Image (cartoon, rainbow, N blue to C red; front, side, top):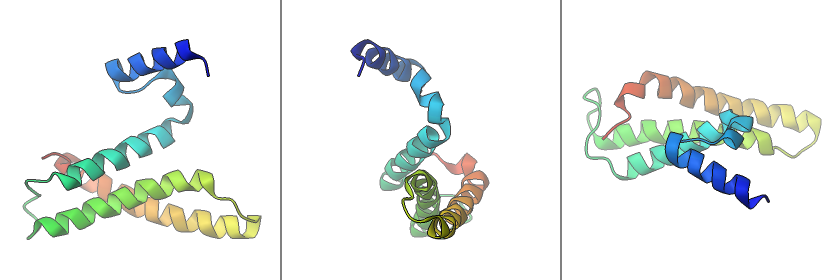
Length: 112
């Protein structure tokens, strides 16, 4: 670990929200930020989109989005024989695609 680079990256994240090192696996970095940020949003909700009857319905949507981004992160950690890898990868990608569709649909509602 190069302490000077780590300090540089820390400062970059503070200033712009990401560091040069984060762009190496930017998709994974963003999936991590999005899933963690949505967990905080979900736990601190005060409102929800008018199309839902209850806050619980909105929380279920947020859970699906969170699950999708967490599934995406897990695709890099699959450790099994090739024939099982494809099946597991596809299963995780279905979950991710579901979450991504909801993320896109409700993007302008991700506030509280």
